[in-house]
Image (cartoon, rainbow, N blue to C red):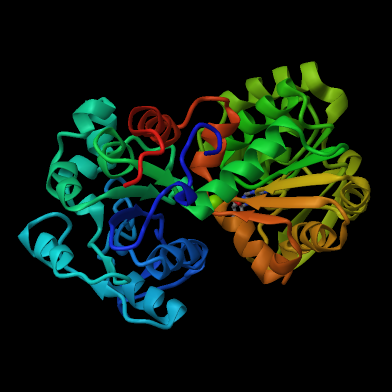
Length: 420
Ligand code: ADP
Ligand code: MG
């Protein structure tokens, strides 16, 4: 038991049917019926292996893509294939979530088998639109199709989907109402790393916040400054631009227009309040870079041209940030320093990630593009931890109890450690 939640260790697994909810949501290549990245599958594979090796029948539940933006909304066949390659054993797949075909396939499983069910979000009750509109309680989620059809076939529910733990959906929060439940190894690890980062990071602790997902960056900045876990927040990317603009520094018309084009003007005022309150802990870029006709130009703040579109931090800022990262004991990074996808504007992100690879500090990187940057600059292996969850991380940082954590705690109190 950890954090009021059962771990897999608490249960006898041999011969048991385990429903394991994972997050294997990945960018999809429809044309080739394959996945563009397998990072999340690699991350949850050890839990599935451990369950199967212990003699359980492992039924895998997962979602792929979002019913809201309708991107990457796809079946889970490629995931089963990747899993099979990673584990070096056969992994079953069924084109059904909780209908008769899926249930028959589950009943036919042998000890040690792994079976991946199709995209849970193909069921209406599992969709994010459904979640946002109907706001079912956890008790109500226990009455949905997916739970009422699958739970009777299972002995134990395991959630290893920390990256989806901010979602309030039946496959994540419903089974805990009716089955003994545990968190998987990846969930446990990510929960641990993040709570330590928030509650007792080794000091000095530096947060590097950049990128373009402004709402997340500002929630995070406010939380870590208010809560005292951050000694310094280094800003770059669009986050840095907005802060600079908010306190009246020049960033160029191109950069300002971009802020308005993205409808981020409400953050200008927020940025000002944050800077007024915590200015001594917030580091802003002292120089910026723009790109014209494929050529990079750098400007100190006093010489920013009127029409600049700032898409990276400059040399002076890079040197200063790298020093702070080198002398920190804990560094957390979410969001790149610039448009690192293009060579002329990658210097800031590249230098920061290389500094992350070199520092003796404990390093944590979260966020899809940041994880991509870590890979691009070949430092993934040198990082302390790469967090698979972006949305969950942000929700956790705001101090709210995550829906899945709440549900898992409920199961621990109702079913106790009771052997499945
Ligand atoms: P993460 O996925 O790591 O959380 P975000 O999604 O918040 O990061 O931001 C990543 C994106 O931000 C990248 O595609 C990058 O090109 C873009 N970006 C970085 N700096 C800037 C900038 N100054 N202006 C516009 N976009 C930027
Ligand atoms: Mg992103």
